[in-house]
Length: 117
Image (tube, rainbow, N blue to C red; front, side, top):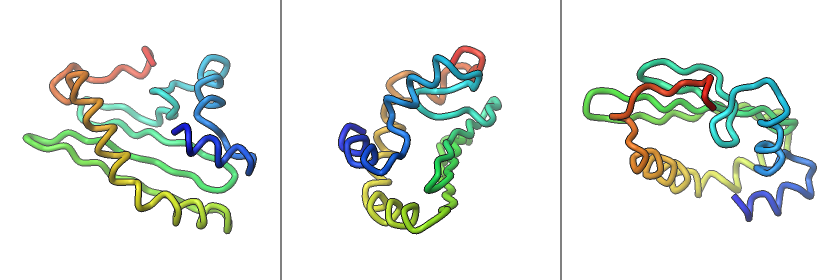
């Protein structure tokens, strides 16, 4: 995230620091830097919108499995270029997020509560 933030700041895009700071001042529920769109017993839909693209990701638990789905809507050439650069790293990031969640007890832990984010 540090490398990403250093690169995107020059383009006027949201950095993780800005998103974490915003989570204190805005009325939007967040988990880490991601806006919470919906949380149910077995699924969390998170994401963010910016001028170059909007993205959502779903982490869904199923019996014996965890499914992660990402959807991206590019607004312009900057969004398409950004996506082309990060796509090769996407699987690594997703695996890292899932490992972190597993260390915290997910998916066996109780359902997420957006009100506590």
